[in-house]
Length: 280
Image: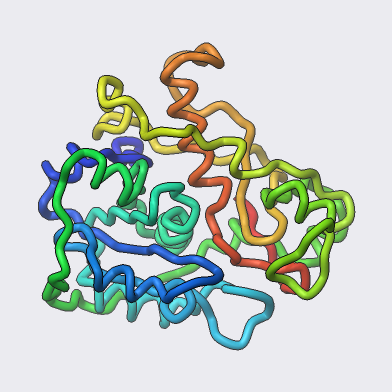
């Protein structure tokens, strides 16, 4: 489905009232994201909880994928059918929103996009928020199948037959600090590719918003053998397009934002101790 855009902007979203909008704000520490949702969210957005809805309880590790049955129940509750276009947003860095984007694709639902710039882009465009929670009619529950070729087991990572990228901050990669996991450091042999290095300081310019339109191609699969360490994805491969942009062009900066969403796909999906790491 090459016509499905990876990123969409507020203008695109306003023109698609039939899209299912999902609020996936989350942070490791601080007030529960549900409280922020109740204080204000995009009109029509349903709240999804990373810990409760998008993770299997009991591990291994932090935020492992839920079962096919659990995820199918969530999609039914959100009114998401096979033809529903899902748009996910978070605070604005796209790291957490990309978790659900990837899960939808991994479970076979291709019509999924991320709101570029998230809630910040929406409010900076002068668009309203609401406290009203939408009433959503459940969709028929369907059978989902997880594409396990997108996942890597511990043994595969330990064998070092692939490049393993650790997308956390350099100080966590080095083991200087560790605010979340019990052990500091990184998987032996992993390379550091900090997700934050791929973010731009401001939303993508509106003059180039056509890059996020319905004709934008979907992201290419990362090169064979690229894996992610400790809850995130990364890829340095060029995104699909007619030509490779200048590294300083608006398109290049846009592609950096695309990579950023993929780079932190999992927002704490696998920890040092977990039994699986993601493969993209």
